[in-house]
Image 1 (cartoon, one colour):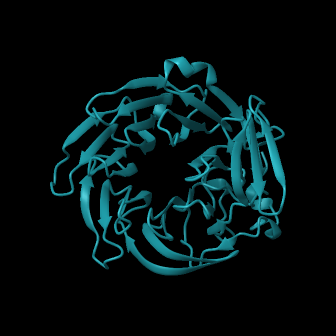
Image 2: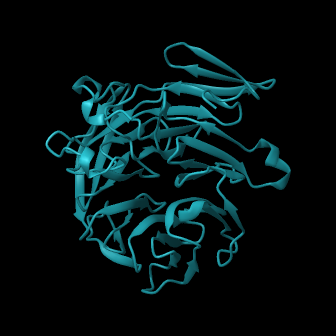
Length: 365
């Protein structure tokens, strides 16, 4: 497999994306935008949680560092409260901190586990926080109480989690996908063995809550519908591969308006797709390091992605003297998506029109 350290400096930012100022000093583990404004939070392996205010004027994007807090150990995950004022972060110190960022308050610990916290999400419809850990549990937290209101045993360690109320999907070790109906959160709705043959890396609930995407370390994505009558629409497709080199799919994000989605991988590339027409809409140029995480802002006008070493090739392939961590902001060029008579039309800002016929397999599938 090709070594990222051998890539030329010219490939650091081949898509000419705007770069966030003062990035973390170590690899980024999660990115998330505020649901209310252009505030971007990143967690990283240097034990920090950082926030930037992102400015956008036409095609010009800028960033201003706002604040940061520290955990005792590397931070693995983050989520915003629905009002856009508060950030939750969890990590290897086995706790979740609540940071009232916009009010300038100090972080407080609101959740604890017996092993590192891999995923965290705020569920506004329940006014609860949910955390998933390598201790093989999900825990639901009422922020007014010190103990969890419910602990749900998982079949294995939590690797990925997605919530689109009332749907929640948890990906664990051993390729388990555990589906919950949050109207009855104390019992599993369904347990599925991943349609992908290798370890689950990421999951993303459909915007209509009728199914989910799952990505694996073997450069493949599965599209899964929950309705038994829709099983014929399930499929998998290959991505983030080049020749015989196969890379992990690290991140899946649905566009909040068009409901197309983005994949990002350890090949240093991100691509845009439409699951209904089974089409790749846009393939972006590869960066010289992996992309471990990404996030759309609340209106889908900005796509943030981190470029840094993801340890997928071990310590022997990491050179700390040359490794650089970057966070970039890409402006998606799609300005209109619409269907007409089983045809998907995608208009781009540069005047191009992509026509996708429903039922045509995705590129590289």
